[in-house]
Image (cartoon, rainbow, N blue to C red; front, side, top):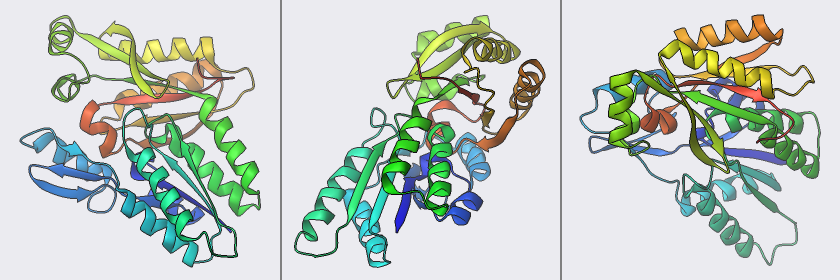
Length: 290
C-alpha cells in the first residue's frame, strides 16, 4: 500500500485529505507565546483573525525529525509499505531536511526486517496549494491503483508545470517578517505600489510592481495569457481573507481565456504569517516553470 503524507503548509482542505487518505503533518505556530498546530487548533479563517490581532508577528517552527519518524512508523505498522512525503520548499523551511533524517532513521531501524519498505521524500520547491494540488492528484492516483514510480513521476510533472503568481495588497506583514525591506514597504505605501511575486528555485521573488490593488489582477491576467500552455488546462485560485480580488481574477481569467477554474483554495497560516491575510494568486498551467 502507498501512503501520501504532506505538511500543513500544502493547504490541502480537510475534506480532500480525508477523502483521499492524505496524512497531514501540522506545522507549529507560536502566537504571543502560545504554540498552536496549524490545521488542528484553528482553521485558516480563524487564523486570519488571530494574525491581525496578535501583538507580534507569529513565528513558525519546523516539524521535528522525531515527529516525522513517529508518523512513518505508524503508517508502516498500519500496513503501508511505500510512503511518499511531499514537503514545503526546502529553501524556506527545514521541514524537508527533517523528513529526510527521519527516513534514514526509520529505514535503519528496519534493516533486519524481511519485508521491504520505501520512503520517498519530495521537495515541492513551493508553498501552499501550489504543491497541495499535486499532493491531491497523487493521492487520487494511488486510489486508482497507480504504482509508486508512476505517482512519483506524476508529482514531478505537476510540480514543474504550474507557475504561481501572488499579489500583496498590504505590505505590513511582509515588512515585519523581513520578506521585504522597510524602505521598499514605505515607498510602496506612499506611492501605492503593490508587489507581484512568483517562486523561482523554491524561493519567493518579486518580479513586478504595479500601482493599485486592481492592477495586480491585470498583471496576473497578462502573464497568464503570455505563459499558459496551449493545452487548455484549467487554473487554480488561491487566496486568504479578502476574496474580492481573487474572485475578480477568477472571473476575468475565465472570460478572457475560456479556461475553467479548477477550484478556489485558502492560503493558510504558514504563508499568511509572512505575507499577510490579503494575499491572493493564481496557479498558471505551463509547459515548464520559468
